[in-house]
Length: 403
Ligand SMILES: O=P(O)(O)O[C@H]1O[C@H](CO)[C@@H](O)[C@H]1O
Ligand SMILES: [Mn+2]
Ligand SMILES: [Mn+2]
Image (cartoon, rainbow, N blue to C red; front, side):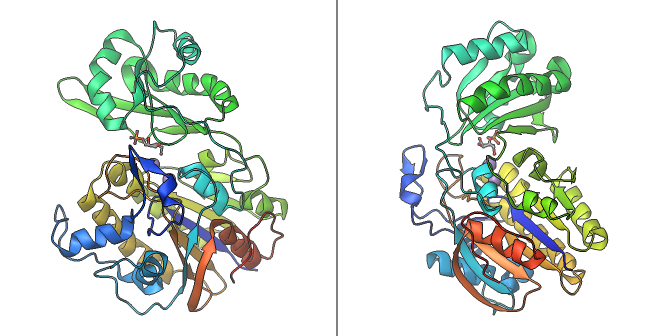
């Protein structure tokens, strides 16, 4: 028996999506967006010097094949990433018509999204009146604030004081199929915010809006507002069994790390640990020591995306990558013979791009524990099929194992 660790570096895209021209940030198509390459290029020209310095330094990921995968996906220059790949490496493309976290993760888990998500228009108001009424009623408020496309940090600065005064929830969306509700943890109440999201989620899911996201924050108008780690996503349940179900149905343990539980509505998942990425890394290290033979551990590290990609913070993103690389270097050393670790991503979020939304990109597929070589260009669902093949459990859906 062997174990599998599937680790998603949220939004670490490597460019080259063949359908990038059909996805947008505002009016600009995502053609040419390349999260990893553009960060590497900014670092190399000294344009990412906050809290770090010089060329992007990712020796462990690069040795697994990150630079090689990026050049395969997109032909982009990857200064600083020039190692001879010693892992099994390739790049993967997504087929679902969404560049969001659930679309990416479901497809990585073997299930391309079988429908078109509902997106709210980039207009003010963004939400239909009946939805606004329903949300206000569920919140027990006179109305809602926001009602537009926005960045989550900008909108709490804009409406935080009024929200504290009126008790109206701040509702906003993005280029993703999301309905996000921001509210103050103390004046509005965290439990009340979670209950509100849970109450309105079925209505939004029925519209094929992928997620209702609770966005709690703290602070004051004078000192400013900060979001907390108590974010919670209420996502549509995957409409068919995915990798986690395949494993559980075969009698295997399935451990979730980070937002995996939310993304899959806990389908097929035995237990989940949550926290900051630093805390999640500690949990992942612990699981490398304790995960049962034959088990699947599925982890998501979200801060690349939430703290740096959406904020268009190139230095911050580079710092996060360099931190992750150091940590994963340690983790790779503690894998046991027979263990498989796959490092990949769910979409891009190029911090050098315009707008604040995800970018349609291919993702890296970096495999430790199964020798060296080139996988080439594969599909997201092939990752699920490969993990299933490694665990010797039956797979479903369109994926084909590359192992
Ligand atoms: O700007 P914030 O609130 O971080 O929102 C981002 O987070 C959402 C979920 O990942 C995305 O759809 C994007 O809107
Ligand atoms: Mn994501
Ligand atoms: Mn995101």
